[in-house]
Amino acid sequence: MAAPSCHFHFTVHKVSRHVITRSFISCSMQPSQSNIKVVINGAAKEIGRAAVIAVTRARGMEVAGAVDSHFVGEDIGKLCDMEEPLEIPIINDLTMVLGSISQSKETGVVVDFTDHSTVYDNVKQATAFGMRSVVYVPRIKPDTVGALSAFCDKASMQAAITASFHYSNVEIVESRANPIDFPSMDAVQISKNLSDLGQIYNREDISTDVAARGQVLGEDGVRVHSMVLPGLPSSTTVYFSGPGEVYSIKHDITDVQSLMPGLLLAIRKVIRLKNLVYGLEKFL
Image (cartoon, rainbow, N blue to C red):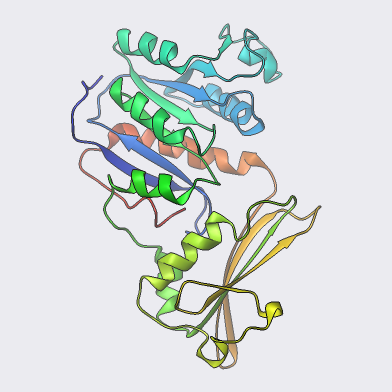
């Protein structure tokens, strides 16, 4: 396992082919050839339990720790309704788990499903122990994004950016089953990424104050429409249009299992990273 150094690298791994999806953020130091020991932070959550099962079934990695403030002391395998217990109790002490793996000289990855208020400190702590981090925090706050982004270069939202060069009208429609802070961080970040291109969108009614037209984010005319509709999947759609044509990029999430292939890819990828750096804020 690599020793701590001042050279930190972050990468973001998409969980679908479209860039507008929520993403896994990976922080790494220099890679090693050790087996991958995976710590699930937030293991008792639905997505955390799904990750435990996915990692257990995957080749080349294993669950080495389960951290959560709920179900402390319970075997994570039993909590996940697995056929056999994993003999890994849930503990509420990330430092203890990190220290144990660090002493074992194994390659470690922390998968963090905790909270936007703790993710920055968690990543710093994992890095201090010479470990990589894969973080999934859909509602991460702008100041946290900014702090993490200090480690990143700029990258592209390839699908949306390519489309933006061909269309002068763009609007974002999102739906969630339960009320959250609207517009969501997904919509805000997509809008920011498009605005960074220096184009003006929706010129025909950019200054309208009709509430039904949605909220304009930023100064470049990108509008967002947020809906709370119980029963619908969590969804984000970016619509581009021109005369006689509509182009849309959409992502629906109906089950957290859809995120697991991206998670496993992120775990494997972050171990192999050397100097490859991708922009964090471009994908959230």
